[in-house]
Image (cartoon, rainbow, N blue to C red; front, side):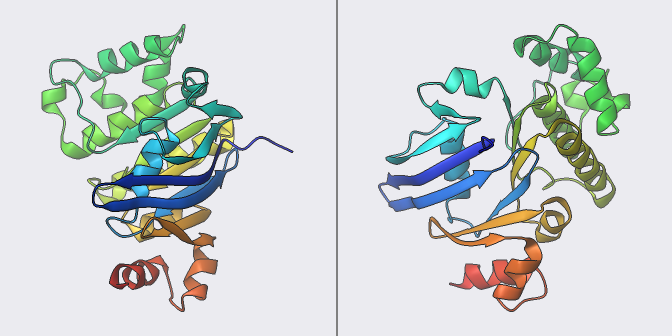
Amino acid sequence: MVTAALRVAGLVKDYRRGRAVDGVDLAVGRGERVGLLGPNGAGKTTTLLMSLGVVCPDAGTVEILGHRLPRARCTAMAQVGFAAGYLPLPNQMRVIEYLRMFGRLYGMRRADHAARAGLDRFGIGHLARAMGTELSSGQKTLVGIVKAALHEPRLLVLDEPTASLDPEVALRVRTGLHDLCTEHETALLVTSHDMLEVERLCERVVFLARGRVVADGTPAEIARRFGHDGLEGVFLHLAEL
């Protein structure tokens, strides 16, 4: 049996306001592109944070490439990349300096080469010398994705990666992510409220509602199951519930 890039079983997380995640099972195979979807409050971000070992579950297990968290978290996270639109970039560093720094933290011998190759992969090589203060919100998002994919991780987790990007730049992100997953068997787990982007990028989607998995399959399969033409109709249906 081939080890999944990510495997979580029976995840549960309670907060004062109630149960945020209620028995979530999820597996992402190597090279697979999976969207984790659901309305606000469905438990997506909490599930992501537990999958990365940032938040400890009240019950359940998490394995990354066969390494059980939290015991083997350091070993597992060396093979993981994470980016989110809400993570800030330093204002007083040039983009190439920021990426080079992370390359060295990842233990890469050719950090500068990897940084420039990463910028080129997503079509933003011209931003190498830009300062953080000179970047738009969309450009900061792009740099964050480049940073997360810099070391060609076995698992790449993205929280709302195209939220502030125009359609042309979002296309470059999809193309770069697709190539990364294909060339290096990188598994991708992504959350988004842009259903069309998810349909274009992901080969499989998992819908959460009230902390539980309510659908798991290809975008077309799930749309048919709920009687809609696309994922947007499914999303609106679950939000109404």
